[in-house]
Image: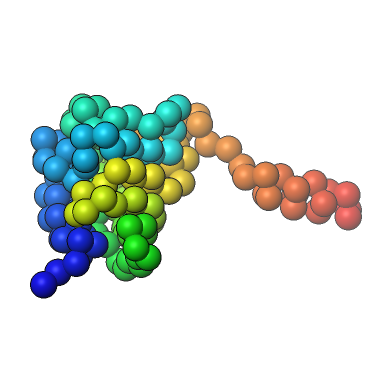
Length: 144
C-alpha cells in the first residue's frame, strides 16, 4: 500500500505531466499556501488556479519531470526539471519543491529556482552580470 508521500508524489507527477490549471488545487488542503520566486508573499489554495492559469498562458507547454525526492515524516523535497517554451525558445531549468504534507495533500509548497534567466528571455534588458562576475572583473582590472 502506498504511503501518503507516495500518493502525493503520484498526483504531483500526474498533474505536472500535462498541466491544467483547474487540477492544481487538488494538491492542496483548504488552508494551504504556495510560494514561488518573485511572489511578494505566499498565495492561498484559492489563488492557485488563477496563478497557474497565468503561468499556462505564458508557457502553454510547461511541464515538470521529477528527477528525485526525499522525505522525512511530513516534509518532502522533490527535485525536478521544468520544460517550457519561453519567448519562442525551448528551455529547461531545475527546481526543488519543499512540501509540507498533512495526509496526502500539501499544507505548504515553496519552489526554489533561479527565475532570472526566464525574465531575461522574456525581456533581454533585464540581463545583468552576477556579483561574482563583477568581483572577478574588478580583481582582474586591479591585477593589471
